[in-house]
Length: 299
Image 1 (tube, rainbow, N blue to C red):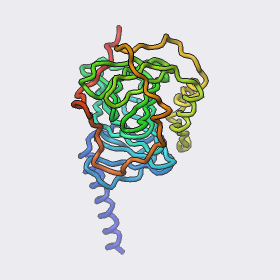
Image 2 (image 1 turned 180 degrees about the vertical axis):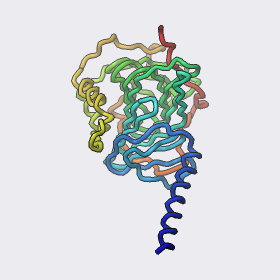
Image 3 (image 1 turned 135 degrees about the vertical axis):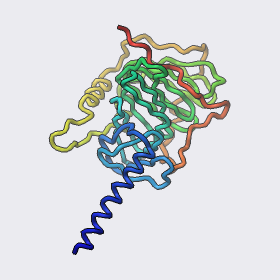
Image 4 (image 1 turned 180 degrees about the horizontal axis):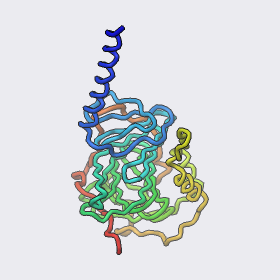
């Protein structure tokens, strides 16, 4: 009997030790899973198998999070930014440094496939503060805003701004043109081309895309859902058809708009597992920094 108890205690401390090793190798947690539906996998750095995501699981810099068919996940980052992924989506936390004591956040996320919704509600004035989302064709820089990024295919990305503004440009550094996308507008960024002129997004199309990403969590008793404010944002965005701001303009004239109907194909599931499929630039080097940084706060 004592031998069995000893074995159980030994196994318990071995599990704790392995957990500590994993946490130490990944560093400080960048965020946690606040809602999950279906099968979602988390790949820690240098992990080829991945683990099935559960509520409250921590995610770290360099992690890759992948949703399977009919699955959804919500991640709350340490700076209170929210990330929602629809089915067959894959995101890599390429860079995430959060130092509130220095008024600094530096985040670079690679959306490798599928649809992602991002709510970034805080400004940071510290040195090199930024929040950007990269795809195979685009670099999206944000401030305090709510937006959707859809990797339609490896050759096409669609950006939709729900609130605030985002700045989108091609991943190729040889294309020195960008597009400012205002509330309720969308913009397409095709491989090897300047961003298309922003177009007003009909409310019904916005609502349809939101339904592909929306996830309503069921938190344990006594806990407040992380998406209480989030749900209000969805309702507000879906009910508004006209933008409050003039149509944003691109930095270059005569930009050819990609025909979204012709380019939208059925979202195919990404290849499962690591190594991470980092977005590649077919015409030049991938950008090393973001095009838009968080502005200094006014006193």
